[in-house]
Length: 562
Image 1 (cartoon, rainbow, N blue to C red):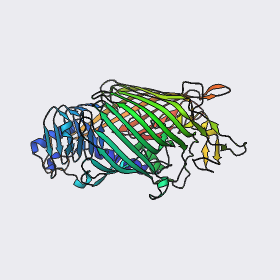
Image 2: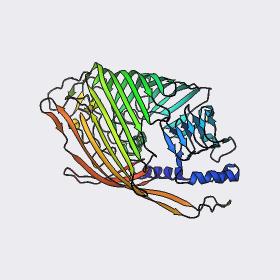
Image 3: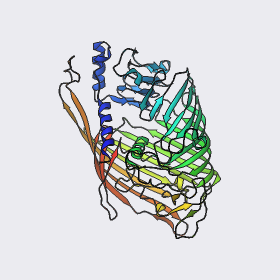
Image 4: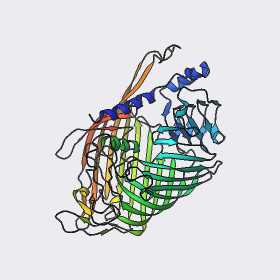
């Protein structure tokens, strides 16, 4: 029963976002309304609801219909753009190859966009949603990342937003502060946020707050240089589930899908994002202190009397490192039916510093000792995916993910990886394939993470490999006449819904380096499952194929598994 309310809320939100209202009621000319409705109702049209962004490297093939939110366009739309009851900002380098129509909203940055058609704006007085729901002149609105409040002060915005995700360490990490953006071909962006961690202390306890500041300068259309300073809580292995999924699981079900550690310091980076290119390259120098993060007791809707899962002990100290990442996105289309390749690679190399885990005291065992890891290490992550259409409404998706160190050494826990759970091996318990890291539980007498608290001895494996295969099929449900729209009817008689289904298979293995016995592994782990998907909302079941337990595990995803 505990999952019924969040399931219902997500289903209703999905159903509402999938509807296309009758534009006749917005007050625009009937012929224009009919034309826009036909585009918005077309199954080939990309539909965006709420806050959304089309990044610099994104190319959307076909028309785009956006409603009820704040749309930022920095990439290319090969078709028309329709924005209803929302605002749009065009970044330098944005391109729309056909017409742009704004109904009940505003557009900024129009001088920066390359437009292949006409621009038409039906501003205040048009649209049917409450005007106060839009981000305009200091009004506020709930978005997919929390309350987003803005006041236009020229080039300066005062923002309130939610950080990474709701979690058992911070609760709700609220970020608030000013952002500055300049125009032109080489704009400057500056932001400075204080972070209030609602589970840690009151707003006045500044020693328990975090911060995030960044200054970024565009150098032409392809290059950016920037510096940043931060005191944040960082998730380990955040790629398995989305921020929204992690937040809802923690806030509703008392099930935090991630573990965390603290980072405080500064960095300087260089970013290359060629215009209208799928390439995104970042090289960053970091100088920061890393610490263990303690479990707090944030509010949850269900099971609030239960204890939260323990946090892992991480290596603490100062670290200077060099991080490089490359992303290449060649997919045509997003969602469950797409085509093309996707690749993301990341490498981090320690340069200087000293990391050590605090002494862990295990009941019935001799007193532990500090364990030093140093800074001479290399670790990385490689994620390669292929999406291939099969038949009329099917798609085969393949994914290979590998990470860890290429050297014969132990990594500090914050650089390790653990498998298990909805994001990796859904047939197995969350983070259960951890190379024995959670087999040891103890307390620490000293350390920034919190003296006297209990922690797991580590996080996961020093290496891992994961293979995922998934076939997605589906069918359309259509009935009624899409052209039968009468003035006195509230809803059209045409109904169109897409229902997808999927079957999948996963295989993975993890390795841990032992100073005496060399590399030890988890053994091969396999699972298989199936699911039903409506829009972005999916209900899945998975069964492990190795081990003694064959229990069916049900889980929910708010988007594709990968």
